[in-house]
Image (cartoon, rainbow, N blue to C red):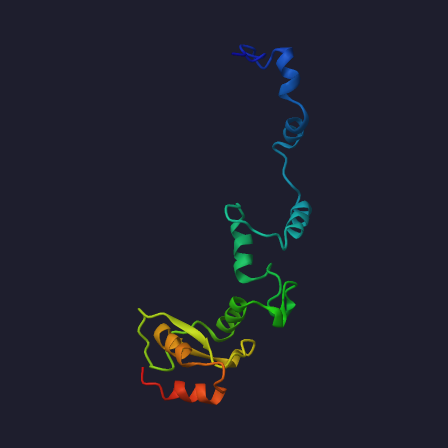
Length: 167
């Protein structure tokens, strides 16, 4: 078993002292106790705008509030640089509907508002990009709708089927 070269030596010993305050530690010690000026704080704040906050990051309460209010967020919709438009995936298209029309809390087919049921936005005739082409349905009605829907059916037949459903 090897014994450390500095075992039993104190910080005052010249053989240890030259390693104790070097490089990164030396820079840290030179700034210890100094405060940033208001101008420097402002510049640091500007540099952090748009920074992705990861879970576990410690950020100030004011910065947290700004993120919640959306001041520092990237633009929404077409203003966002990641906007895919018509090339968005299935789940993104459904999220657009939920953001635009809210989360469904009732079924337009069976007229239930039971909070223990799950409510979804159901696309009526395959025009996923059209926000108005969705109807609020409970999970059961949504499943029944998809069972009765065939790709050869016209939009009118499907809408009539939903309107006349006795589920």
